[in-house]
Image (spheres, rainbow, N blue to C red):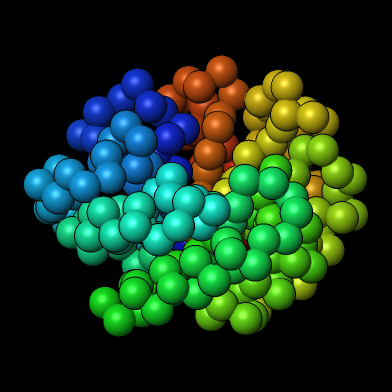
Length: 239
């Protein structure tokens, strides 16, 4: 079973506290954020966190950068170096700053993928609202043509059936699944169990993906442990 945490879920916690919490919740993977926990370009911090994970039997699966392909390519290399120092398997980037297709952004994604692949790391696009990957069909096209992977997460602005379709067509390129339960529109964070039936369908569709918990109810650490139990139950159904 592949389950973990997106560290930005707890921006107020230190890296050490994040590691302790993951062990307490019986999680294996961490996607480390590039805003607070390991700032882009802080190679020393990335190496320290890599060592911290190794000492505690955790995998620094990914580096969640805030590089956006709409901004050219110069800003990609510092987060790439940081991801490499962390020992991450992938670096997550954003695909543009609007839903509209941008040829320039696609070309920058291709350049980022080429640079990362030369150094043995994958690039994944976060399927995020208000970027090109909000459109699942366009996200898959970008993955196919740019040679990158995709991060699925439910979009709270659209019906469940459309989200499930997005996951289904993303499967050939699926890197990880950001796992949370939001009220329609994203105004309120809920226990993951509140959307158990929806998540059962997601897990049934992609049972082998890493499921990375994000944005727990009230941002409370104890709710991570509760939601990790829900993920366990769902993954056990389809292992």
